[in-house]
Length: 185
Image (cartoon, rainbow, N blue to C red; front, side):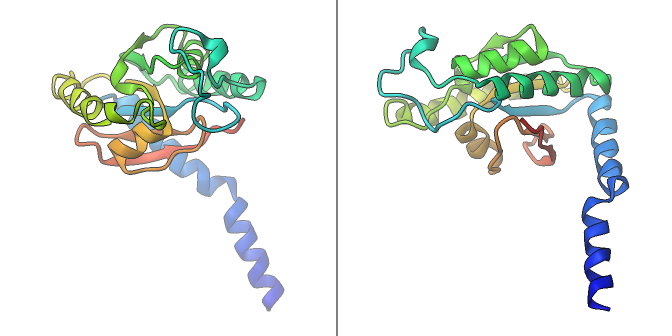
């Protein structure tokens, strides 16, 4: 009986129909529009930014690995294959975010309220960035989906959610998390 119980648990955990229903529901919601889509930049090995970080010089930053670039393409494929309409894609000014946005969506605009404030060098920006984000969202035309390619700390601060690299976090205008989707790298 114990083995049967374990097999049932394993079946439930790996049964693709259980996951597909949830994923299809998410896709249907995204196809309706009016969602805020936060994406933590794709896989960039390490943590934080190097001491010599310069926002205008990608060589001084932590950047995407080859696996992160593949993950970025998978993110773009998810939206394209599922015919999910996107209004505008916004990115942090950090190179790893811009590269994720470029590979996944081609066109994007940068917004400094999406920049990281993880390191001590940028920690004082946190409050202003969140205020600027809130002002921006207050004028949003909620008929379109908006994409924000940003950082762990920004998503965590805005949505109280801890995303993995390349994870997609979907919220409504009130910033209530609707669902998440991890894209493997």
